[in-house]
Image 1 (cartoon, rainbow, N blue to C red):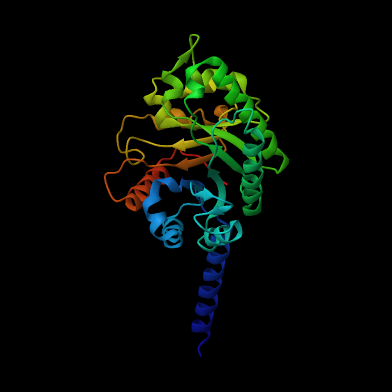
Image 2 (cartoon, rainbow, N blue to C red; image 1 turned 180 degrees about the vertical axis):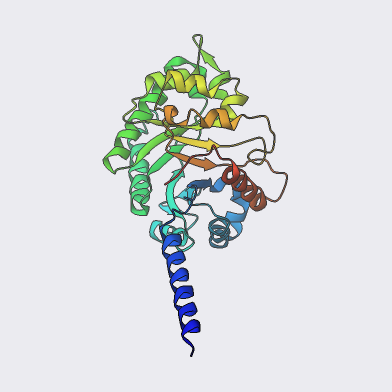
Length: 291
């Protein structure tokens, strides 16, 4: 082989090697760490939970929040099995929605026993949080009734803390539209719950539907909203009515560490709607949830 050809091949090879080295050193764009509340695809989960989880992982979600806990199992699977199904599909199982109504004095011990079993199951699955997504009429009818709920939530939160799990509450619109003694129910809840025991998962759609400004709550109660439910009327971003960029600009002040998509009304099949919601958030430069 001629020397010129050898020289050419040598330098071409060196150039290729240098390109590979620099490419390896270039920082790759970090993927956004966004989760899905599986209530969004509840019918699909009821029909075939494992196949649905696989689709959720394939479309690029990074973690899930369950809405299918009962009798020590998640969607009929043991905690270890459901966790494995999630992780096999590239998903972390980080949180769960479940709960019980405020107990009376007569059934307090029974309710607390239910929570002990529930928390143990969640601890076995390795989740980071449990959220109760509702409150019965007692919490809306009188301030005394709401105080009972807040004392109850503080007690549950203390149990969760003992197992390294955060306990929280998820709002709808009623907490903002219902007032007790001149103050919205949600404001009382922020005042009457212990921040060490109860955090709040703020549903960005429902607080706005309730006529309140999320940023005003971030200003008044910084750090209390450790989780966000990122929601719109249908798919996230579809309505054009929610200024998500303004909300994300205040994310750190709110205390939000995780963002979870939830879709409850749909322009498409639910599995398509949750994918479109994820794509919207991936493409929005201001969305800054990362692992």
